[in-house]
Amino acid sequence: MLNQAGLIAPFSLLVLLVYLSIEAARFRRDLKKIPVRIAVGGIRGKSSITRLIAGGLRPAGLKVMAKTTGSRPVLIYPDGHEQEIKRKGRATVLEQKKLAAVAATEKADFLVCEMMSIQPECLEAEARYLLQPQVLVLSNFRADHTEFLGRQREDIARAMLKAVPPGTLTFLPEEEFQPWMEDLAREKGFELRVVRSSFESAKLTEVLPYPEFEPNVRLALAVLEHFGLTVDRARAGWADLNPDFGRPRVWKIGLSRKGHFFFVSLFAANDPESSLLAMELITRRLGWQESWKIGLLSVRADRGDRSRQWAEFLKSGEAGFLESLILVGPGGRAVARKLRKWSRKSGPPVIILSETDPERTLEKIKELVENCQKRLPGSEEKCLVFGLGNIVGFGRQLIEYLERTADAVRI
Image (tube, rainbow, N blue to C red; front, side, top):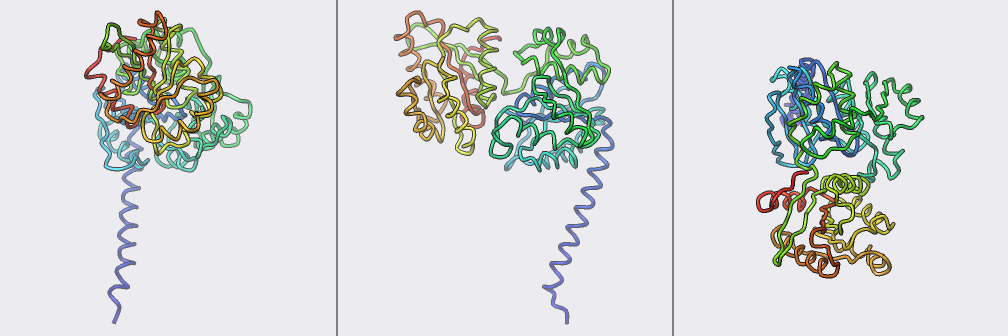
């Protein structure tokens, strides 16, 4: 007599294999229904570029489905309305399968999707087996996720370029290009198109209703032109484009005594290099180059690599323009210990806030700003606090609180 328990495992495996085969066939069928697939990868700016491409295609009468996964993951439907993605657990690249199903149901002409993966092998699997894009945009190769991608710019670039599927047209900004990339493109069998700055891309940054980096605009415009859209068509699509949740934002905040200060959210910039570029963009745009600057660094317990990166950056002296540095969030004390000698010797004062509630944290920040203004004559109208480090967790909570309670400044 056969052992029934011995039959259960093979039968369960058979059922699983049949299920996976059906799922794979369904996924391939969904992908075939989407004529053009565009993937957006890189370190910073992916969400912005995804929105710019989708927003530029839509006025041409094309049905465009898009997805961003950065500061706040959302689906953007062909009519332009957005739906936030609610996750029960951690993010997974298998979301891209569901995205393909939705795009197929919507009869989308284009699918524009921000890539999710960080580890090189996952990047390759996402590009080659899930999204299978005809066009890929790589924004930049700045240092982040260093535990997976490496600490040097070239290491990061090689990891991302090796994930490009054969036959994919790949757009890259000229400042990220290195000669060895052409050899790798020939070896891997994909076309590399280097996008140079232009008068049109610079002018288009002025059309957008929010501050945007010129390289992001430049890359999106190059993709749109590749599909036959004109600069005028792009301008029409971008004039009222809805920006990403993590975009740079500014609020004017009153103090207990007479006066105010400005809070600038750059939480989504994440890494030091991108944060410095965003600071420069905002201060130049609003004429605040000479203002006194305080940094509020939000630290995540699960991003030790980024915390180390910020500590090294601060100790290098490149943030010497900060009048003081505030640390908030789990891991703040560990970062403070790494900065103790630097702060005592040549750096600005480092303050640790144990508060996790946005309202109480803001009250502490107000006290620090008022002390700063007392010590720095004439700074009442020029004091800036920059939110840096991480948007996940405290950063997002503070943004949502300021949206409800503070006066937004148009930038």
